[in-house]
Image (cartoon, rainbow, N blue to C red):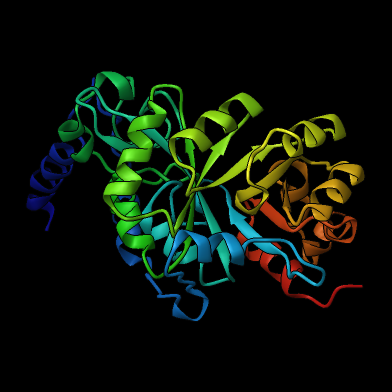
Length: 314
């Protein structure tokens, strides 16, 4: 096989060519590692709704509501890169979860899943997403958190919506280069209002999203009681809201106000809490948030957070 090694390396290099200077490939063993990863299905945790109204009703808060997970950037775990459909599927093996994902726009106007402004960290390419064609990006492969080149490609928003049909809810964190009207148009073109929610970070943006897509669920940043009261007095439909209470903390008064209006409160645990949960038995790191009344844990550690939300409440 020694004489074939140059040919193999040349073929692999061709796969990652595009978008500026391609990242040097790792060893052949590392490049092959992704092919050995199993792709288990998750039908036991699939969730489906017929209409946007049904989805909104299912995500309302009521006393006794069981907490949910939100897989931050899709829930990357060893072997699975962020913002990949295969990663979404893997996350659902651990429990019912909302799938948070990031949306950017290519140079030729395609909406794709990508967190960063550039391709450098999470793909085998380099350069700005907004200056690169979709065709060039499609030739790249995704890189996981350990730096291993996987077999997975950058998906489009349309492909993610097609996958989510009958399976999960997508939380769409669209970036500044994505016009909200284009995002809404793509969701509607895929008949996806029953399987998606739009993430916004201000009341102003929430009002604009509600104007453009009154049928869609919104996740709105709500870190203080004053923000909570402003949202509740704004005329936004509380049946179509999820409150995002912050990262690493959540104000009990925000939870009280939102729950009075039947609105779930989400808290981000990515960072110190998720790292603490990596220790044996570390899932107890999530207990303070659950005991405070948080309804959704937005996490980078899906396996540990899943144990926490499925454990008996104290």
